[in-house]
Length: 353
Image 1 (cartoon, rainbow, N blue to C red):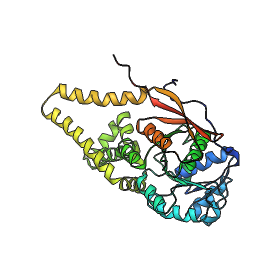
Image 2: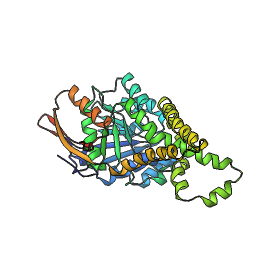
Image 3: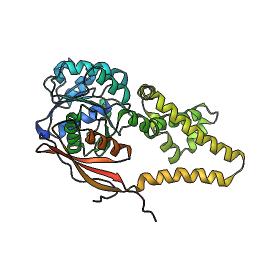
């Protein structure tokens, strides 16, 4: 079966109607607040919590309960999203797990996954914690910047583990139904390597370009001439520096490897310029143009796969991880009569011969 270039179709719900799922969001800044607003608007029973009393007060003004102790916010919930700063996630995961029942699925929205996944495994929570990362954001921060539509239609990475397939299925079904998410299942290490190039390196490059301008004796003249290319290339440099630093340090190894790869390409550009070599310079620019074009021109093939839902299934986990690593995603996760059926999309291979 084939799908259009967007790789989407109608959402499929899981084994429990979304309207009766009780959810909580811990950390209600930009991402957590946006997530909370969408859950509220979708009709879920939701609660919020943030370590900042002022942010909790802001959450209450949205008409959402925000108790002072986090334990009160998460007690009795079916699903909890952890949305605080990356360094706080392992400790908060442990605290929230102790205050919730075994039925409660736990997830996060952090931009790096290997560290928190390892922490969950070490705490014996791999069966109900599903590392997550919605690929959306803004160059602002705080609950005042939250937007119920921010995460709609986003690619949303989830990292299923060998003992957590039931939790993955429940979470994936809800994200598809409520957020129209394109769920990208990946292992945590593969996510971190891919995110280094797709998300984290752009912050470094934007900061480097903007920083070079800031240091220039002609700074004001440069800014006077700055047009769309400069604005597009430096947009993410406008984000909060502590948040960006946490992201880069939390994924230091893959970011450094990606930086070396980018440096190698920049060296080739520099060599072409030094050598006055238009052919080499054009070749490098063509290479970048091809990647940019592929971003807008991808088409997908649709398929369905079914697995028994009664036990953790090695074939199911392998299918999911291979789908994400190949650039694919899910738009459906249906649980019926002891089986789980996934609707997936894979990038269409170019015709050969």
